[in-house]
Every structure is written in C-alpha cells, then in structure tokens.
Length: 364
Image (cartoon, rainbow, N blue to C red; front, top):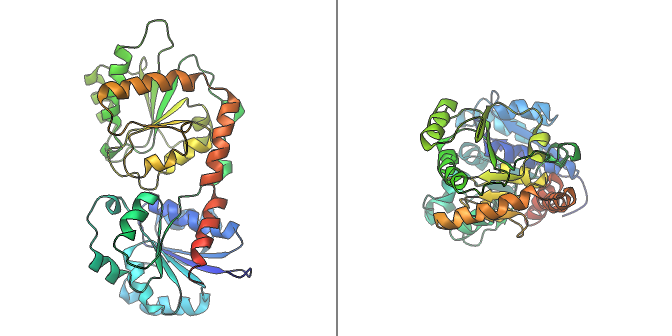
C-alpha cells in the first residue's frame, strides 16, 4: 500500500448502540488515527450517528439503505471517491453492488455468526462482490474461512481508545474485601443469575477469617430488570448490602470502575463475539474470570490475563475462583501495569488501525 493518504467509506445500518456499532465507529477512528480519511455513514437517527458526531467524524447519514436510496448512494459515491468501502450490515452490503471497481470488505461478527450454520452457497453469493471479510476474532474468522473459498478472511480484534480505559493509581483497589464486578447491560444472555448460584456456593464454603468477596453488578436494564435480579439473588440466598450490590446506572467514570475492580466476571451464556468489556477490563490491568463462550478465550493473551471456566465441573469452577480471588486481591499496582501494557499493545485503536490497513493491502 502506498504512503499517500487513503479515503475509506464506512457504511453501517445498525439501529442500536450495539457491539457492531462499537466496532464500526472504532474502525473509522482507528484508520483516522493512522492518517486515513474516514467518512462514516450510519442511519440518520441511530446511536451510531450521535456518537460519530461526538467523535468529530465526517458524517454522511442515510435514512435507510434500501434500493430507493440508490440514486443518493451513487451521488455520494461519486463525490467521496473512496479507495475502500467497509460494510457492517446486510442492506448496505447489497447496495454496495452499485460501486463496482472499488474494493469492499464486509464485517461479520454478529452473535448469529458464532452459532448458526453458514451456507457456503448463500454466503458466497451475498458477498461475491466483496474482496474479503473482516472478523473480530479467530473464532469467527475460522468459521467463515471454511465457506469463503479463496477469498481472504481477516481477523481484526476491536480496538479501544486507551485513554478511556487506562489503569489509574488513584483508583487502584484498596478495599478491605475482594471486589468482583459484572459490568454491562442486564440481559438473560449475560449470565448474571447463573453466576449468582456459583457465588453463593463460594460464600458458603469461604474460610472463616479471610476477607469475604463482594460482588457488584453494574449496568442498565435491557431484557432483564433490576427487580428480576434482586429476586433471583434473594431466592438463592444472597443478601444485597452484605454479599452483593446492584448499581443500575450508566457509569460516568469507567476508568475508576475498572481500576478499582480486583477480578472481572464475564459469565455470559452466549454472544460475546466482539468482547468489548473484556478488553476494557484488561486495558485497566484487571484480570478476567470468564465463561469462555464466543470469542472470550481469545482475550486471555497469557496465563496472567485470567482464566476461562468453560467445560469445568462445578467443583473445579469453585476451586478456580477460590484461587483467583485471593491472588487478584493481593496484586501490586506494578503487576497490573504489566497486564495493562500487554492489553494496550493488543487492543488499542492504534493496533486496530494497523491491522485494518494491513488487511486493505490485499485489495488496494
């Protein structure tokens, strides 16, 4: 790829503030940091449009990406003259057939991509006009490589702005009890209640005289209410205010939350293809205890990053927690700095930009 500035047009039909929206925005920002010119095209009234404005990205919005927008698409294509088009959903991928001769890469990393069967015929037909795919993990890369034939499938993990999630000494854990946190939206798929059961068993056998772990659930209601969680915890035997705490909020100071956590818990039952929360905790130096679904295990870059309890018996899960809680509770700030530095090297926006640019070299 030549050293001259490149122009990338990113089209995203996602209507929600989802992990795909996060990935699309991060792609635009990552390439912009690398010196590319990013033009971002979301739906006009979507969270992606609002966040793009807040990030000062060049914005060209669409009301939708149906064929009735074909004329507008062609006009914008002629005006923008992109060197590369990145696509994040089905409607814009179909519309991009009207841009022959311009390299196109399609992102695939929806929850369904991790478990639904992939038809080689249907997949190749829908993407025949694209030069290749971008995936957020090796897990998804491998699934699509099996059906895409000779077309390349590039693995580019999500990149994050390091200044938003960096480890802070002033918020380094100093509590008298080990602090475990589950951070993110309240949704049955996130596995809160399943972890409650494990946590209650852990407390029942916790040694007398050792600092007892404290669990915080932090996030906003989605497909599960706070009352649902409180009722489930109470039925299991957990006492709010003694064993755990529910914080229904949009966290203003994320760095403080991450930095003050001893052990991050990600107990999801499915999903976790893009793994934003796992990366956030690691960039703040916090180790992970994860269910291992989706792409989560790929975030565990070495044995110090945490562990997955996928496939373990209940007794082995409890034994693993019993090891990791005192270990993380006793960590020094310097230990956390080493972990954070390793995570930044893997999951920063700068690294994402380099990997996206490397993928583009195959096609520009």
